[in-house]
Image (cartoon, rainbow, N blue to C red):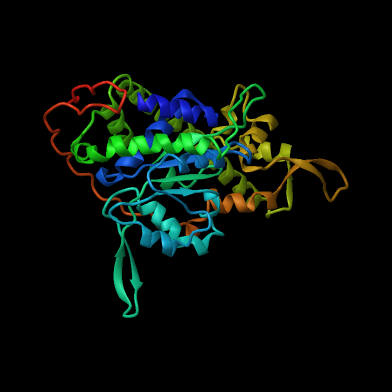
Length: 388
């Protein structure tokens, strides 16, 4: 089956964090070939804690397999606005972490496009042309974004999230060489286009049975649609991956919420101490634990300790260091200046936060059309009857 071949090829060139992640990437690539039929354009957030986790390699493979790829590392936002139309490209954005955050003001247009383009009919209005007329530019396009650390919630909530890790010593992949890897991947891409191109009308009418609800359902629906079109084991495999990965993100969200609470509490303690240059680790821990309304007195088995604190702050690249205090004594301490950028990014003061976008009310889904699914991809089996 074509999807099995694509999944195997992707797995040869990339070490993904799980079998479910490999399934998700395969389906996301496949869904890009029916973009004109979709109501939502799911993002693929390829994130990792450090450099060297294979994020750019993922984009390299996507570039050879998705529908009409467009790399946006050095592309002007104005170009992207004008390229997106009724038959949009698939945007591939490397170093996406540089587009967001307090120091990325010059990329505001591209950031807005990526936020808006998840749903059809959300144009961006700009003054354009010699007559300076208000012009609506389409924003709807699937996009894969690779970056270090989590992207903003507005992206992560609309994305299939792939959390990359560095390869273990025993994990091996085939080196990507354009001489042989590109022709293989391009051949799979062309077969996907030939199979799915004629089925876009059918895909637009499908309302698949979803294992999740709300925004997660919007994001995963295109992937489930192509799985149902493929038939065989793919419908069940796609829904299993959807459940596993969305549940994993719920756990990640809980951890993120806890870490954000920690950053806010540490900022409050520094403010109470007159914003000193550094606070001893033990003093910072004592202040955290004395807050009985916080989770820190009951964190772990005996309350938050130095190991827990360092572990929670590790993802923000913050660690204690030796510091000599005014009394001449040296101790492990946390420097206030190491928190400044992180505070601005993850828990800005209310006056710094951008206003939350107004989300439109969700409508009633259309009635599921009658009939059975079309024949699956070349070499595959007939798709199952549509679930109601």
